[in-house]
Image (cartoon, rainbow, N blue to C red; front, side, top):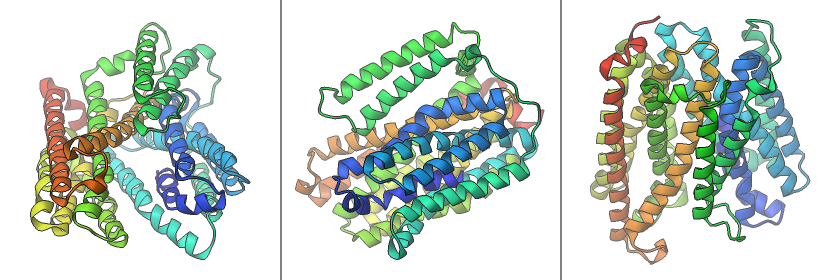
Length: 452
């Protein structure tokens, strides 16, 4: 988890240097980040499925080997094209690092301690996100950008050694048939997710493929995928999973909360820069508060989940989230940067508590041959939520602003757009709270309260 999350954040600070090293434009070097994110998104469900079929330990070792090899390819890349290809391969390995830790944890940790384990995973993921930019900045101070990828390769190799030592084989591995791999379903899902990623991230080219065409194609591919999955005997994503209220609503809530999380990262810097007029250094310090609080609150969130139960922890986190988003919408208007920091301090622990509780609720009742796919679904819903939040929050902010050029807007209009955007986010969190109440009605959460 630490390696995968650091692989995203550490490269964000390398982009200006890459433009100089390869004499490339900003949109061109942005593919270094986007390709990795897209590869993780389209491969994460298949990674979970492969773990169920071939064994989590074997697939994890393969993923770490691929990640380390791709990192070395990136470090030695002679041009930008090779670097982008390496990042794509690194993302496929990263998908395994995202999907399988939760399923491995589910199979190794007693049910009464599952929440605490999910909290540890949340903490390490947040720590990787927080450490990435700092380590990347240090690397650029004392060396060149290639050292960042050598460092990722070292992290992957160390993790590989730990995996070999700590996770023992549980059974003899077998060969899966083509039917069990569900190749048609995998290809269809990859096409759907790739089109959706291009549509929401704006990385399309000027060849007539507008975001609306890509989105329509994505929805059509998703429709074909769900129809095919309902008719095959070995589906990549069993429709029975999504029809189960506990799993289906858990995945839907994971999607919506991830979209809200991304909105804070996308909209916050604009408000801090153009309304509060902070310098780049001060903006970086303010934005670092979120990952720092996340790293500190992950483990306590897991312990709270175990102590009061996943359902109660989930509802408590969503109530806190609604109130915190309202604070984020209005406190900065009254207290400036102090109000923004206070809102982040209240908001970030609610994210960690929700993730620990929801992951525990979804995985608690899973069998060993289901945990990989369920972990993959959680990872998929999170990434798709992040992509959606980035696009929708930006569009909503621009709509509220009334001008596509933020440089032409006055401080008051920017503050109003920021406030209304997070008021809408609070409404989405309130809707998610309603889904949580539906999920936990009719004794749907009993399995997460009492170990089975």
